[in-house]
Length: 428
Image 1 (cartoon, rainbow, N blue to C red):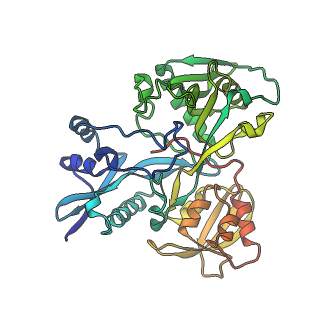
Image 2: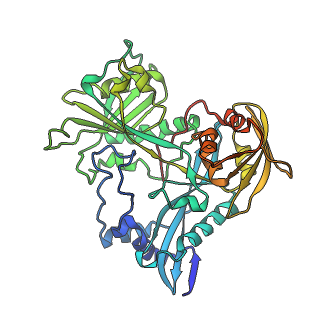
């Protein structure tokens, strides 16, 4: 059996697409409810693609930001994946290059032959050669990607609340204005709003080209949830400082009727946040609101007289990170306290090392050293810790971080602690 791993050519794009689950109709997600979907099912139904659809997508596949790799077995394309070039915001506000793993699949008849490991190694090597010291993905199955050094770094909630249970703790007078707009206006507002959001929010991802083009077209989703409605908030000067996308799906089932599904919601200010939720949670002729893709530190709960009214229905990891260059990654972000720690970081793919992290609120230096380590961990744990979404204390208690200097775990938590939990609403 001859195996070859290489980028695909234009003539091979159709074969590449046929390997991918979303194109060939094979399972593409764990059969568990996902926090990114506001509907009542585990995930939206798959869209059937015709040969004409695949031909159109194949013609547009190879771009400067989409870098596919494929595994050929005896000349047949049997597995594939790709890296997309995006940016992620790290603590301190710097936006750094991230190699985003996407469009991954191996034909069922070629599984258990190490093809995905070879593809992943080739893609991560490519990231390192291009200077991308972080890689990321959203895992369709939680047991696959840890073996390549990835680990969960951000998380999402899905929650719901009955309209009749909602009462805010304080009265509110909006200094701005709310407006229901059409898809074309939403398509203009969202990119500008997102750029301002990701400048502030740790973990947020830059959008892929064409991210919001579908809003103007007003395409109906395959799950029958009906057309999208768009809400924007403008401040006193008339600038958009908040936006939301929601649907009101019809259902013959009384248990599912009258549900308002919030698919996207962003606000730059507390006024915009309060005003938009005030409307969405009291929309006429509805009885229940479901919101997906929400951050784990959603402040809405603390605005309600009854915090139990907001019920979490799904929680799931979202962005998985893989550190490809320890020194560059640790020097790219800022820290919440000043301290110096020696970390022994193991990496099965690229080899480990010991690093002295001299951390401070205005930056850090990271130096390879031959000293006794304060802590030992693998590159997986480092990926979870990097954005501040997972506490070192949790991982140490789970036996995934070894403490060699008393108090070192607490010290690491102190330097990594963010003001807000990292969150990314945009994926790839």
